[in-house]
Length: 210
Image 1: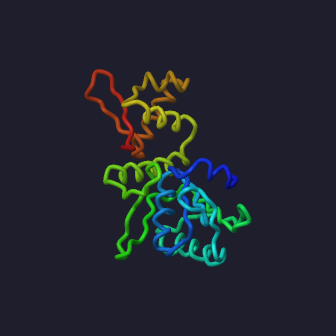
Image 2: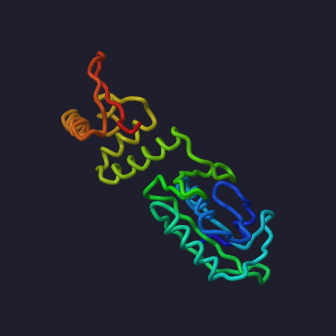
Image 3: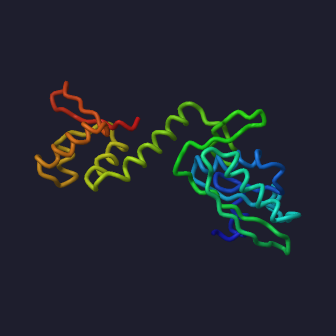
């Protein structure tokens, strides 16, 4: 886990948040969800907004509130690591929130409504419909990609950077025979990973991960 001095030096941003204390598990669930839906990050409990260590009254109470927030008020539960440390002889907690593998994560608001937040700079913002679609597609892509072989992953990665691919292009950058490349494309179309387009002079393929 990153050293606390390095985290404080970085200042609040997309991956770091300072909190003097946890007023309620429901409130801190918002930060946890935002980090989990973005790239993960660190909560420093017992540090004020300027990065000064102020300490916490009870590390056990703070730890209990954090675990309640991540396991009860986040859906699905968000994995976190909590480490007790001290700075200037004041007790501080470093909380690492892992980037989620089950995005999108939701938290409960004051009115018990479920909301999805992401991290933008040093703010936790409610995800727009476009962002939510992107999160869901990214999660779907990662799940699918884990089950693909080397050549299939090459093709999917190529289509994430390019609008389309032809059999000739796939055969070339994968160093495959025409027969082998055609078979891979056919199987990926059949399983819904890519789409084929045959109306053009040279047929081409596009990604299903929109």
